Length: 334
Image (cartoon, rainbow, N blue to C red; front, side, top):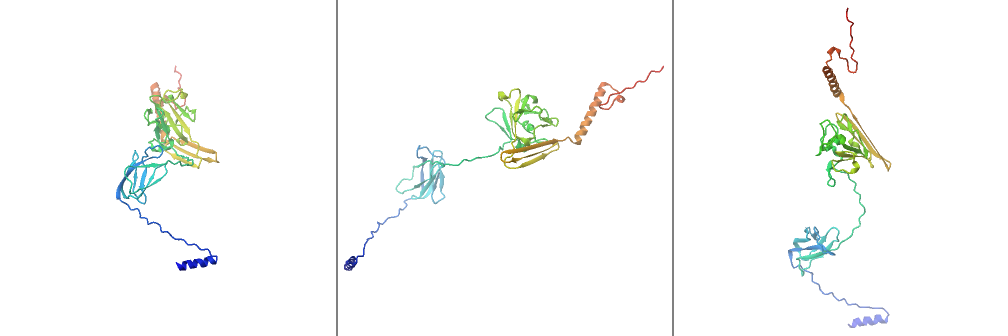
């Protein structure tokens, strides 16, 4: 101590500032030791403001893979928790995550965990999709059938894919025979069904002697058939209303395609012109073929022969089709 005060006196005399600090050791702390291992934790996750249960919330033990979900009432049971000092992470969609530290001196049964709701600002999301159903019966309007023409490849067809023949497969719609595309809706004839294309009435809806309809499915966007209960604005028909909507053209990229069958060939092309204009071109050409011509001529010849036989004309007095019959008479001999 004598040397300490002597040094202090010399430094004070020379004007040198001096300071002495005594370190006080911190009181010894004991690490929290777990009292339980491999035990069960149970509780309920609720809304912190309303107290309403939060079903299907996730409760996970941090630093492990142990995770459990709450039931419909918000209750959960977490088995085989390693220690009673572990930390739980509770998360639920639309709420802030909560970290809950287990404590040995507190009970781990019937825990009540309250989560605070959080508001997340999201930017606008625009979803662009196309219908995938081939045919769909509307549940809002009675007797309404909706058809997507581009999915006609999934339906059976004879020759070319045709929207009217696809509608004939639905209940309440039939055809006179296999070679007719007319719509007989609930017993009515085809002329009793109103056909609209983009709001305009179409009267001649047959093609190739009625085997196909007059509409190219590559140029159609949607088809709706009202079998009954349609609005008064469709007045003037007794059976039903077929409302067809044409395509607007592809606004993103150029697209083209075509089909060929034994009776017809069709093709289409669509695409954008600039940013505000689109185009769509579709065409179809049907052909009868040499076999059809031969059968048709044979049928016409046999029909003409049968007609002359019914009239009692002699065989040698028959003329060719389209020519007048000439009968010559000789003068009587004296």
